[in-house]
Image 1 (cartoon, rainbow, N blue to C red):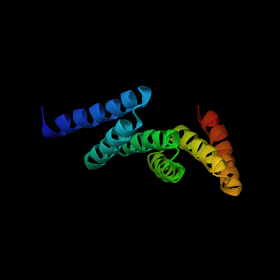
Image 2: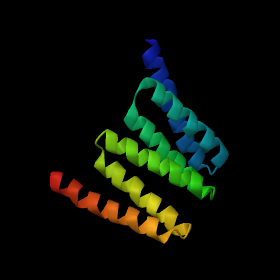
Image 3: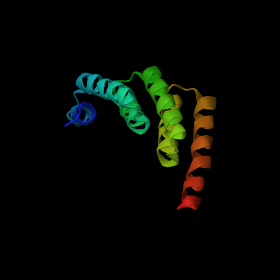
Length: 128
């Protein structure tokens, strides 16, 4: 096994640890595992998996009611998904970010996010 393969397995394991911790409502452990997975995927150059980790981390922050951190993570995930041409993931992250912004009563920002997601979803359906 190469070092690259080993590091990929470690990154995937940390991501899975985050998913499992989130499911068990161990949110601090989920935050740590998802952050670690994000860093590991970044070092591997796997932008899509970095975005997945950011999105998962944003979901955990949202559950912890750390809404500013959630928005920042959703923004990062959205940008990364856009960079790797994953419009469905981009739309999902944008929509989730809009929900958080609505919770924060940032209604204009929430509306902008909803409109962007609304624009992305039909684009996805047209290409399938």
